[in-house]
Image 1 (cartoon, rainbow, N blue to C red):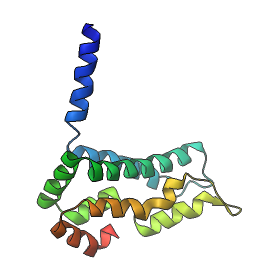
Image 2 (image 1 turned 45 degrees about the horizontal axis):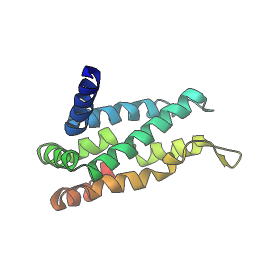
Image 3 (image 1 turned 60 degrees about the horizontal axis):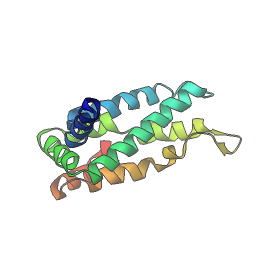
Length: 147
C-alpha cells in the first residue's frame, strides 16, 4: 500500500511539474549535437540512424509538449521573452543545409532509410512557432536561424 501511494506521488509530481524550458531545450540541443556528428559518417550505420531518429523524435516531442501543455507553453514564452531567439533557434534546430545533408545521407538507391520524423522537420518547427505569443512568433518568423 505504501508503494502505491509513493508511486502515485512520483507520477503526480512528474506530471504536475514539467521540466524547465532551459532543461528541455538543452536536452533537444544535445540530441541535435549527436545528429550533426553523423553528417560526415556515411554510409550510416545503426548508431547514426539512432542519433538522427532521436533528435527528430525529441524535437517532435518537445513541440507537442509546448503545444499541448499550458505550463510548458508558458515557460517557453517566458524563457524567450528574456532570452535571445536566434540563439534558441540555433540551439534547437538544424540548419537547412545540415537537414538536407541528413536527408541525402538517409537516401540510398532511391530508398529513404531513416525514420519518417526526418521528413517532418519543417512541421516540427511550425508547431514550436505556433506555440509562441504573437510578438515572439513575428520575431521567430523573421529570424534566419529559425528558418
